[in-house]
Image (cartoon, rainbow, N blue to C red; front, top):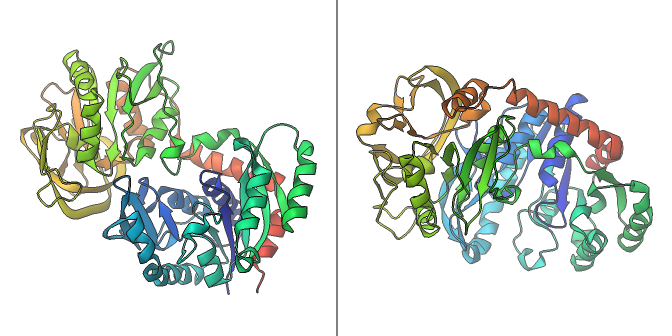
Amino acid sequence: MVSRLMLQGTGSDVGKSLIVAGLCRLYARHGLKVRPFKPQNMSNNAAVTVDGGEIGRAQALQARAAGIMPSVHMNPILLKPQSEIGSQVVVQGRVVGNARARDYQGMKPELMPAVLDSFARLSADADLVLVEGAGSPAEINLRAGDIANMGFARATDTPVVLIGDIDRGGVIASLVGTKAVMAEEDAALVAGYLINRFRGDVSLFDAGLAAITERTGWHSFGVIPHFADAGRLPAEDALGLKSRYEAERAEGRKRIVVPVLPRIANFDDLDPLRQEPGVEVILAQAGRPLPPAELILLPGSKATIPDLVALKAEGWDVDIRAHARQGGKVLGLCGGYQMLGRLLRDPERVESDIEAIEGLGLLDVETSLTGDKRLRAVSGLSMPDATPFSGYEMHVGATVGPDRSRPFARLSDGSDEGATSRDGKVAGSYCHGLFADDRQRNRLLGWIGADSSSLAYEAEIDRVLDGLADHLAAHLDIDGLLDLSRRRG
């Protein structure tokens, strides 16, 4: 059996994804063939894989950390929320349907074979599989049929290390409480714990570690101090998008405003822009008007029509049209591109019960949503200046109309993509990942009057991953974790 280790958390957003990414980079540098794996993920931040499917963006980052291309088998079950109570269900990279939260609980036992199949496929070509849990094993109301945490660990006899986040407070209670509510058979697979995001003198927590170990019987694998550069890596889900509103501009910087909508998707498109020294990216909160800016960027959406309804309810459609009338630039990506048109139709009710809705009318195009999803890597030249780029498409719907005669880009297969307004101040594209390409990002900066920069985004991601690996090596019992991964029941 392959060496394997599962990192679970006392709750969501305790740092599981980045710790797994750091460990992937660390053990890969030691010469091991490392594979990341997450049985079940819930996120609208997805990535296209080399085998033509989609997985959570966090697993794509972990694959990069391990030095390999992402595969659908790294995240066999992906749930993409479309409403407050339901999600699209993606199995081994392909959409199989939609399910309400209650109905999904009944589906989980049927999905375990796909999870185990993907785990076996990854394991066949690995020295070490690092498994990330979802949510928390303390959610015992969801334990029946579980495939994301202890259900998977039990099915594969995978040892577990539990992560607690001291930055949010109550870390002793969260770890001890998790042990208290778990079934004995589940708790027996938990070999230890680690503490994440510690600030200050670590020795001050010695008594805390002793208390946790005494009450749980679990071994401490270390305390990870706060890693400042973590924010430079792509966030896994919208919890990582801290909305903010700034009435005053930062001196000398151009402003990009992004309305944060309820079903925002593929928001890692924003990450490279947020690192540019010459711009400030404002993530606009609900309940306030959009502030003045050089550019309003409408991001992707998992449910474009419901998000357009939400945008109009905020009055942001009025703000965006006023911005455009005053000569401001507007860019829509994927769902945001669809919103910029005159009309959106959903004849098959792919997203909602709304058959048709007027768009913002800033591009002379119309979109019809269909059940077929387009997933592919793309490359080409943005128009009219032929700036190269590479990225990916992940969307439903087809867009037509006169402004398509002025495409945003010409793809490498010779096809035209996206649309641009007559005056060149409004544009839309289905391409994600554009601004990770330094050439394309500097083109955007020039479009809004910002200075170009020397930021090499892809190199920066690798620099931070290397720094994260070094950080973990300095503060965790790395050899002990590796020995645990080789444990057999």
